[in-house]
Structures are given as structure tokens and as C-alpha cells.
Length: 469
Image (cartoon, rainbow, N blue to C red; front, top):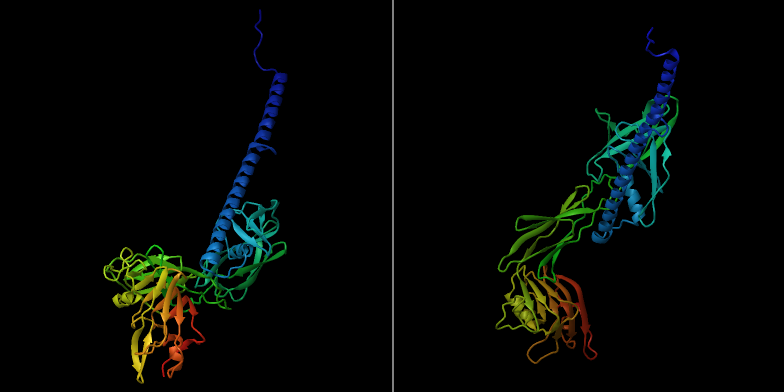
């Protein structure tokens, strides 16, 4: 009996091949189809790039909002509304290696292509009036695209280095036309020496062209304006060094970058701050000499204060004080302003707490045989005499006596600051020395800030300023 042969018949072979082809087609569709693994992976990459770009833009917006707040409310600079400030900051070149920003007057466009230049979508958004972001629908990018980045990204007192990259989805870039004032470096980048709006035109192999306006408003070569520094006593018994600095105004050569930081030099030590004031604790018995400030704008230009300060101890005067047992510190204040001035040295501060104080007239000098008595006199020292508030009230009665003329209320010299108090002045009747008898100030060369005056008396005029004949 013959055995039956084993093997695959032609029909079975054909069926097997057909089944394998079907399986291959299903697999290919699963991997490379419209909803296949590869497509989903590509979409995932694009979605990740989109999310990353959005996150980076939102972080930039948050940083710019912080800058706007500091400029407007801390540095007291005129920076306009928040929306315009954010648009301006983006226009200065918020670009990285992974994405870049293009701007219009009302719209900001963020392109997130990456280094390999394979992306083909853009994200656009607008800045709303309240400073929030409104994202727009994603669209395909076709034709010529011009991207650029600037170094440095922030303000500078040097030249700007500009990198430009142009590409086209329809052909190769055949020409890139830039302003004649630009200097091309060996590495292909451009050196920009002046602020301005510059047009760049790219042409591709199809003959198509595109022009982009690049705004450069980052160069600031003007140093801050001249300024002086002053001091004040804080509520927590520290001395505050105050630097009221203004940046140079915008010009054709320079933008106004704004003050960026301050360096406070105290006894040779440097203290950096972004604030226009610095509070220092004063050690008992220690003096601080040659205090000055260097202010820097955001581009790195600097200016040193025209004056220097010295700081000594704080001497307290209070209605609860005692001239016999007090030593002038906050726990044992003095009772008399005159006693505090006598004990003070140049650079010391006298803090007069809220209350009512009578000023005892002092003889200053005799001019042409006329005795001049003054209510508040700094004894030619450089002092900070500061009240606690408007409820720190000094009374000075300049009515004539039989022995001497009672003269003006206040005489302070250069370097002394009088601040935060009220002076109640009773002038004496006019005599042969006229104005000096009725004057609030006499030969006053110091600084008076936030000081209020009241004059009392029956039909007696008073002068703001007077001199003895």
C-alpha cells in the first residue's frame, strides 16, 4: 500500500501568501497609517513641542510682568501700561535655540521649530489688556520664513550681535538683503551699532520674496543722571541710605533702559541691592564714614553719587526722656532737643518722638552789634534731625525781652537735614533789624523736607527767610 505524500499544495501556498499579505497590510497600517504608531508618535512630538513652547512663553510673560511691576512701582519709572510693556519686551528679542518670537503691533507669533528646522506649525497669541495670554489656532507655515536672535537678549551698552536664519518650504534661499549699515562678521553674524527698525528681505529659488522688520531697541550707552544720596531713620531704629537716581532720557543713540541695581559702599564694604534705598543697623559707638552709592542702569552704565555721607549713632528725644539720667538711646532718651544737639557729632541722627517741645533760643553770633538768637541751630554740625511724624511739634517764641532780641526759628548748615515735624513760630514785632526778627529761616543752607509751619501772634507778620543787617 502506497503512503500518501506530505507537503503544501499550490492552493495552500497561495492561501498562505494571501493571509501573510493581509497581515502585513494590517501591520503596515497599524504602524504607518493615518492613525498608526508612527503618526501618533509624530503628533506626540509636535504636541510636546507645542506644550513646551507655550510654557516658555508663559514663563517669559510672568517675568515681564514682574519687571513691569518693579519698574512702575519700585523704581518709579514711566513704563506705560502692562500690555504695551509686554509687547515691547517681546519685540526686543525673546528668542532661544528651540523657538523664536516674531511680533506685530497687536499680535505675537511664537514659532517652535527647533534646531533641525523640521517643524511646520506656528502658535500665535495676543496680549490682552490685563496682561493675560490669548492663544490662537495653530496653522501651517508655508513659504519663506525669516528668524533672528540677538546677543545679548537684554539691554546693553555695547553693540548687538544679530543672527539671521532664512528658510523656505518651496525652495532654497538664494539671497538675503540686509541694511548697508550692518557689519558682517567672519562667522556670518551681523554687528549692529545703533537702535532702529531694520528691514531684511529674503528671496528663494522660486523668485518669491519676504521682508521682515527687525526692531532693535536695546542699546543704551548713556549713564544715569547725576544724583545725591540722603539718609533717614526707619521705624526699626536703622539708618536708611536713600538714592534717588534717574536714568538718562531716551535719545537717538540710546534707549532708556532704567535703573537696574545699586551698590552701597559703607566703611569699604559693598552691599548690592535692586532697591533705591538700603537700611543699615548702627552699632553703638561705631561710626560709618565715606558712604557712597554707585547706580547701574540695565545696560551696565554706572554713575557714582556726587556726595558722601557719614553715619553715627541715633540720639532719641522724648517727652518721657530725662537729660540728667538719659544717654540718648531708645531706652533712655533725652528730654531736650538742645541737649541732643550738644551731644551729637557730625553724622549722628536725632530722632524726636511725637510730642510737644519748647525750643530755647540760643545766641549764634553778633553781626554789626546786633545779637542774633535762633530757636533750632545745628551748631554747624552735619546732622539728621527727624520727627516721628507731624505730631512732633516744636514751639518757638521769639517775643522781645529786655535783654536781647529773640530771633529766627531755624538755622541749619549744608549737610544737615530737617524732616517730618511741625514748627509753631511766634515772631517778635518788627524792630531795627527787621526781617531777621520775623523769619522762620536764617542763613539756612541745609535740607528741609516734610516740615510744616504755623505762625501765631497778634498782627505780627513773619518771613520765610531773613538775614540780620
